[in-house]
Length: 68
Image (cartoon, rainbow, N blue to C red; front, side, top):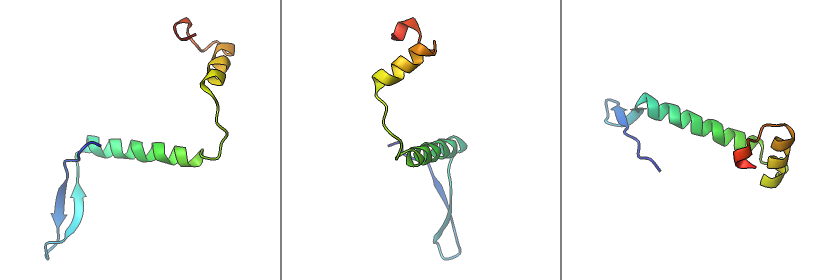
């Protein structure tokens, strides 16, 4: 796992109140959260084999010769 370069904002008593991270790391975290949400939403969907996916892509003309 990538190490974050976070900085903390502390309150008067020295307790951490907020965190500041670089915007690119924030965007990556949001993307990861989105990916996890998609996985969770689809966990009950039936599995499809790679062979089935390739056949469907071939039928639709979307699979290049290189990958057939």
